[in-house]
Length: 236
Figure 1 (cartoon, rainbow, N blue to C red):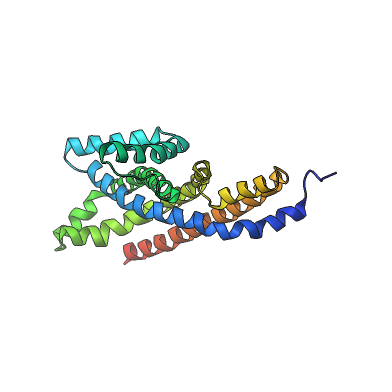
Figure 2 (cartoon, helix red, strand yellow):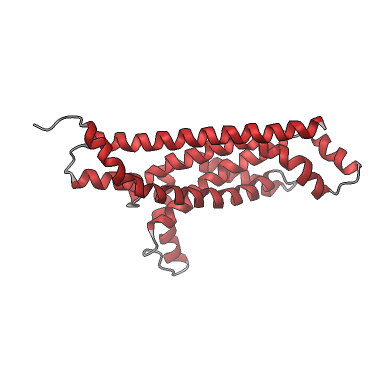
């Protein structure tokens, strides 16, 4: 009779899963890069004096936040090719599944980063910018030397949390046939005819635990390091 839980199989599953961790990290890195750029644009729109831009940016953030990740993933996966074919007569059905995964989580990360950037900017006393300009700095220099370094420190913890969230939410990508670390885990289970399912998912959980804890500690160290630099500048 087969054991219900076999610790040896758990450890033997790790080498089968780890090569696909690169795929998961690569997709997350692309989503963070594109999402950060789009989030900056959205944050600028939210901070602008134009009511329409503020309304559009806030409306986008609200819609994305109210849409579950898996629903957004299916909307992008099925919706983008359908719109492209019907409206633009472009066939996107042969596009790699990973492209739709990156688009989905870039859209999510953009909404999150827009709020992180906006709140970090507003957390800095506006008087510091005015004082810097009054002593001879240009507005751009004041933002680059005074406002941005402080806002960056404020944003670090939330940026780290967002990155971890993208990695974890990315586990849903297997539902549209994308083979990352979670997709590989499901393939192994299917090849085993459903046996050793618990061991496979335990191995998967261990990888995510190590990855998330490592990132959390890394961003905590970055925050402390930049905060010390910020404190030394104020002291001088």
